[in-house]
Length: 410
Image (cartoon, rainbow, N blue to C red; front, side):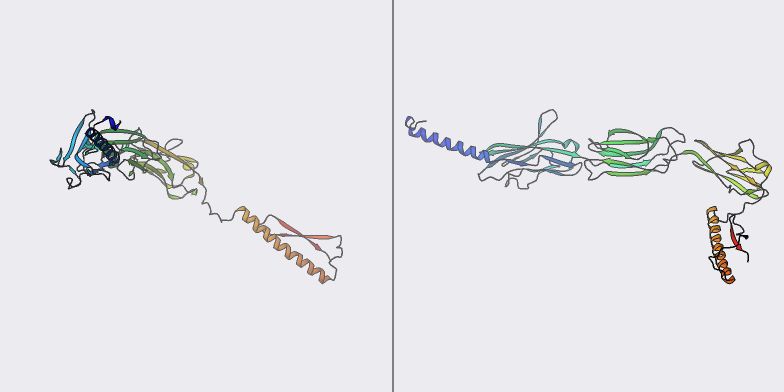
């Protein structure tokens, strides 16, 4: 624009408006809102939504601070407002307040303190500053509300039956979001999980059940329920010990491989491992009923006197029964005419070694005697012996090997 085409007054007005626009643009470009964009709070506890204007060299006047919450349907609702002249206006003043106690003096700090958090407090909030001469500035903050769950785990008492059934249960109550449950075990089981509303609005209760077919291998084993949640610094571990029923597993003791004719007061014992304990014990033989020299007494089979005719090479069978089923085992008894002598403890290899040592010693002695007799007779050890040789046999008694030595006839 050419100055010569404008009157002097109009030109001055145009120049002032140009300077004002430049100042407003410069101020607006230097003003921004500082906020923590993601905030996590715990149900029933407190948190702070941080929001403030960044420092600026220009004089900025805050004409109003407004907090809005975005609803799920897209609309917005007012949470709190501060006006320099009218003061604060808060929708829920018992739980929400401006963090700065003197906001009228420091209106650039619009941080909001929230207490007794509820599930419905979760959402996206917008912090708005209305300023002069910079205009409106805002920032969005996402608030996530968590709830710490409480966890319990227990071993269940299954029915006395060999079917797939629940043996342990883990319950995590009142979590937000829903807790995640895993079972730590090397047992071959199956898992069933259910989820339902928790005790407080917006919380969840998760129940996980561990099932398997009862067995002696699983009885007494530990399994661990692991609960993971965003509010935990580390997983919550709950360990339980299984107590499971199983049918009898039978072994027989009492036979020591030394039953001989006339031996008295011996017995066989039916050792049954089961849960619950066996209620019935039955004794029999592989050929039919028990010999009349025996008497069944529960888990024990009593023998007053060992008899060759009725007990030799007889296979005794014990069958134990509990509510889950039966188990059995057997043992064959051999009867000897007399007691079996205890083993001396020397094996065949040891006996052979002793014999070889004795033979070696006797051989050395024999050679020494032979040389002594030759010197005594005055003959050279290198002289030939007579063709008529006599032999004497040297024996080690118990040893099977003999040593034959040449005896020179004088």
